[in-house]
Amino acid sequence: MTKCWVNGELVDRAAATVSLFDHGLLYGDGVFEGIRFYHRRAFRLAAHLRRLRDSAHAIHLDLPYDEAALTRAVCEVIAAADCEDGYLRLGITRGVGPLGLDTEGCGQPTSFILVGPLRRLADGEAGGLRLVVASTRRTPADCLDPRIKSLNYLNNILAREEARRAGADEAILLNLQGRVAEGASDNLFIVRDGVLVTPPVSDGSLDGITRALVMELAGELGIPCRERSLTVTELYAADECFLTGTAIEMAAVADIEGHRLLAPGPVFTRLQEAFRVHIAAETQPSTQARVS
Ligand SMILES: Cc1ncc(COP(=O)(O)O)c(C=O)c1O
Image (cartoon, rainbow, N blue to C red):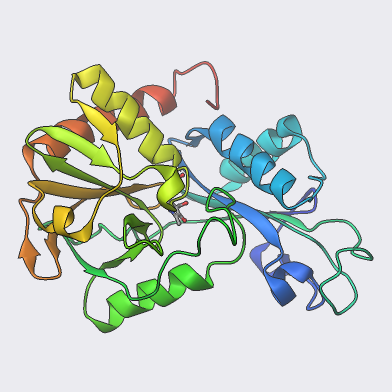
């Protein structure tokens, strides 16, 4: 029976609750990670826990559990899950405190791990995704560093809502300079003349774990890969475009604002195949390490 983990305990879903006075709820004050598991093994867990620790550090939040304890908790939740493959949401909030922005007075951070199957954006989109360029811009790094995976997703939600209202699958967020940053919950790549290009994190994207793996796989396959700023015009002129992320995995894009692209294109197909092989190798039941 699927269980959630809350402050060190495995509990039934109905008991997985937080106080209305939790600053995670009141102010979005906290950090999180979305983590996939395959064959009951967490994928790239060490990288997710490192990013969680870095995000927490950046907002002066002391994690109440170290990496070993969080790894054990993740394994417990996966073992109790009623699915072999699924998605985890690991969150740490500032905890319960008095009304007001001050973090002083907040007690223990609230820690939780939720589990569930996830409808991927790419499900049922065999012909490729349709994207729009959102009018909502990515919060500039000078205001909130996009590397921090915080509980503040309103910016991304507003962009996704623009996509939904336009009948599209996902929104592309630009930074204040008009350069491409990322999708509402994923990183973006294009292919032009056989070269893979993705915007640098400094243009306003999350330092995606799937993005890093795709760049690694491109290196192994001999596909040249560059990190450089991208304009919207370059997206329209791309041979291929695709999104990456823990939730979406890898998904080809067929249409950006009415500009048609090849989906899935040959470079995407090679990388996706390598991605699947990599997941299988890292999470196959015989793999000694239960986490990587
Ligand atoms: C805003 C944003 N960008 C990119 C990503 C993809 O990152 P990752 O591959 O680490 O899941 C996510 C998902 O976590 C995200 O929320």
